[in-house]
Image (cartoon, rainbow, N blue to C red; front, side):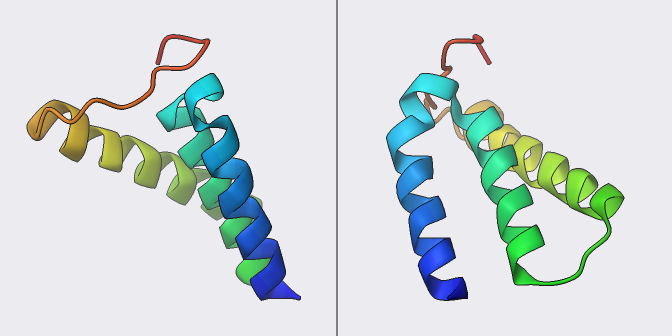
Length: 75
């Protein structure tokens, strides 16, 4: 059951990455995965999702100059 949820979430991530942008989709994916994996408090889920999406953005976009999709919101 969980494997199927993770697979569907990764397909959803791939389909909407260009439209919604890297930061938002990564935040949503990480939040979903943290909630699907186990019992984690919502405040921890939000913090870790924000930290992982902004951390990946900082490393790849700002430090390594890898271009990510900006999405409709421009970030």
